[in-house]
Length: 566
Figure (cartoon, rainbow, N blue to C red):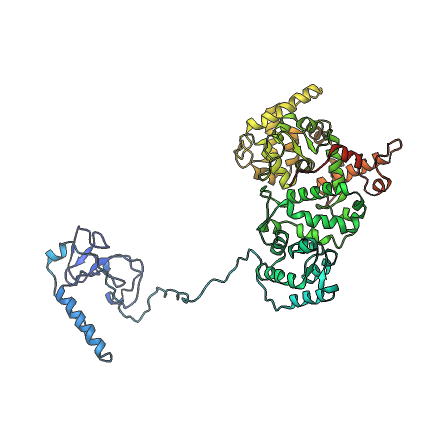
C-alpha cells in the first residue's frame, strides 16, 4: 500500500478486466494502476506535476466497475435533460451507492469508461495526436509505365496535316516518310516501321486521313519515346519486341544509310547483316534472355540513342554498337571458316576448330546441351545456328560484358543450382590440366588453383561462387579462361604487366570486343590484299564490301537461305 492512497485498499487476487492483481478502492470503485508519466497534482501538497512511478489513483483512463441498472437509467435521464436545455449549467456529479464486496468479487464484463483528467494549473506533458489527413486527400500518381502524360494542344496533328498537304495528291510514300517522322518528333530511321504501322504495306502509300487517327491513338496512350517506339514497331499489338519486329527498321537502314550504299548491290548479304544486327541487339538489350524485349529493358539500354545517331553519322563503322559493318564482317568470316558445308549451321566438331581448338571439349558439350538456349526457339538438334554463333563469339571475346558472364556461368553451372561448386570447377579444370601436361607445361594442382581463384573472386558464400560474385569482380575473364580456354589462360600468365597496362591505356574507352574486332578486321583485309589470292568476288563488291571468299554462285550452290532468328 502506498502513501498516495487516501482510503483503505484491499488486495484482490483475481483477474480484473484489463488490469491483473491490482489494488481496488472499496470506496470509489476504481482500480489503482501503474503509469510512467501522469499528472497527479491533486495528490501532492506542492501542487506540481511529477513523473509518477508508483501505484496511485489513475487520472489517465481509470477503470470503473460497471454501474447498476438504476444508475444507468439515471444517466439516460440526465442526458435527455441536457439535450432539452443545452444552456443549463451541468449537474454536479453524484457518487453512486457503494456496491457490496461480493458484487465486486464476482466476474464482471469488460467495460472501459472514458474519464477526463483533472484540470490543473500545469499542463500535461503528453502532446496532442497529429491531425488526421483529410478524407478527400490522395497520393499523387508517381508510376507511369508508358511515360508521364503531357498536355496535347493538337499542334502536332496540325503539322502532320500540313506535311501531307505539301505532298502530291496528299499521299506519302515510303521514301517520303522521313519528313513525316520528323514532324512527329521521331528519329529519321523510325520512318520504315512508322510507314508500316500506318498501313502503308497495304496500298503502298499513306494519306493524312489514315495516318492521323493512328498517330492520335499513339500520342494519347504512349507518352515517351520508349513506349512510342514499342507501339510503332508492334503496331500497338504487343508490349514486347521480337526479332521479326526489327526487320523493317534494319532493312531501311541498309537501303538508305549513306555508309551502306555499297551493300545495296550485294543483295545476298542483306539478310546476313540484318540478322547479325538483330542478334547483337538482343545480346545487349534483352537482359531477361526471354527473346522478348520489354519497355523497361529499352529504357535501361542505349538502343534508341544509337538509332538516333544513325542520321548524324555517315560512317556506319563509327557506330560500334550493333550496326558496324566491320564487326559484321569479322563475325561472318569467323562463322564461314567453321561452316564447311555452308548450311548456316555448325556442329560441335566444327566449333572445336574455332581459334585452333581454344575452347575445351567439355565446355563445347555444355554449349550444345541447351544451357544457353534463349527464349522458346529451338534450333536444329546438335547444331548451332548463325545467330547463336554471334552470341558465342561476343561472349568469348568480351568476358566482361554482363551477358557474357551470364553465358559462361550457365555453361559452368552443371546442376543449375545457381552456384559454382568445387566439383564443377574441378570438372572443367581437369581437361585444362591434361592439356598442359600434354604440351609439356607444368600445371598447377587443382587445390592451388582453387585457392587462387577463391582469393581472386572473394565469394560471399565460402567455397561457392555466385553470379553476383563474378559480376562484381574485375578478374572474371581470367577466371573463365582458367577453366575452359587454355590459350588465353597462358596468355594471361605470360603477359608482361607493364605491356598490358600500356596496351590498356592506348585503347582506353574501347571494350574487349571492339579491340578484338579492330585487330581481326585489319588481319582479314590484309589477307584479301595479299598477292596471289584468287579473285572470288565481283570487282565492285570486293572493292567496297570486302566480303571474304563468298560469291553469289557459292550461295546458289549451297542453297544459303537463312532460317535462324534471334
